[in-house]
Image (cartoon, rainbow, N blue to C red):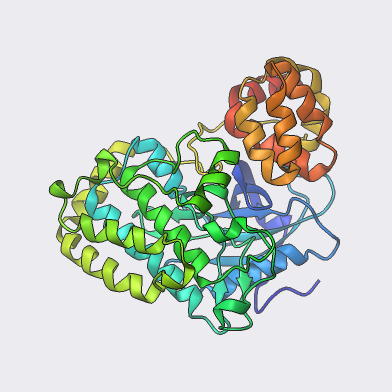
Length: 415
């Protein structure tokens, strides 16, 4: 297998101390110590392999192009048999390890927005990274920009990650990017045109829309649309629904420059893609706002570090979870198969798990799950739809996120 560019292979004899810290894109993410380099790295393991590793190599190529301070650095291609994966050989991306996890985990930990100087810095850094990707030759679309795909280093600087959905743009024409009917991304951050399955073609404006929603999340510390069902979000976004700019966190009387940031949000999530600004245009706003608050930047960072404490934030789909040792002899598929009966009996976060599975199983099967009367019945329907290893792995990752202690309890039985 030929790796992209000058990236080298990393093998098992160079690695130790594997810990599963989460899931993203198309596989598990592990924190691993690279013995020769003397540093921790993050390894994103490929969930499904067509034999050539095309998906992983594509993501590696995307990330390798992103040689920018606000894009996560890829350091190599992993090839081996990880203790936290399947017994067969696997491929993975070796990336720099981001000590403070994801932006989503930060917002969750703080239970609200960061201090405003940090809000404006994050807004600017994300725009810098996206502007860089859009101005590569050829340009790159991210197509899944959201807080859990923005990682933070120890100084809380933002870096973009998870290029599993990204596309190299072979034409700079906004009307010819992507294939018609192609949908990619996370529902709450997807533009209204993405739900027009017959004609949607991802463009630069698709990423800009997502950025507008991300700005709202940073400024409020909340997930857009709260607990709304995905089916309702899909219905309402094309009809003009957006996150509320009247949220109490967005009181312009208390923050210098906040009105300009709110105006930028509205411009970015405008219904008409042609009306949305470019990231170069966004930078004109974010740079000015960041400069105004820069004198208070270090105090804001110190304040966040004090609130976070010494623990390392784990990035499991953007949510903080305490480190739990799971039996690494079983992969997700084996775990789900082995503990089917107990999972059906004991899982309570069924609706959340169904929401996670929606992009894979489709709206009809999702509706059948929701129609079941009890948690047990819903779980039985879910198991009826776990008809591939990929879906089972996704189900397992959702269990790790939403039923962590149940997974730990069942894993202890395997030891």
